[in-house]
View 1 (cartoon, rainbow, N blue to C red):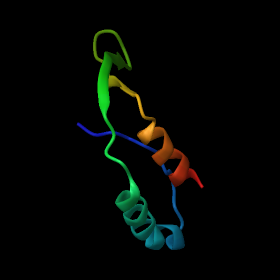
View 2 (cartoon, one colour):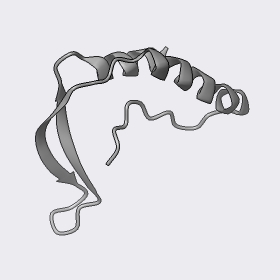
View 3 (cartoon, rainbow, N blue to C red):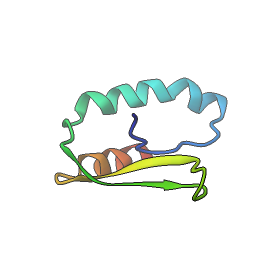
View 4 (cartoon, rainbow, N blue to C red):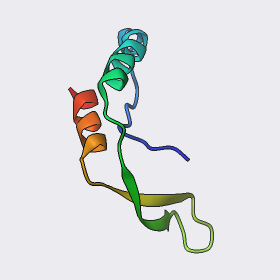
Length: 72
């Protein structure tokens, strides 16, 4: 199980080098999110789904704030 906060896509060499430091700095300042299971679903076909996911609610928007911080 994992939580994707932001998909980064292709990174150039400089971004790849600095990313661990940026994430470490952000992670040390994060509040622990309190997530609630809000539903389950699947995509990619009725008989053979490619992705199974769970929807989560985040009452304090901690994950949304982390996404915004990483997007800058």
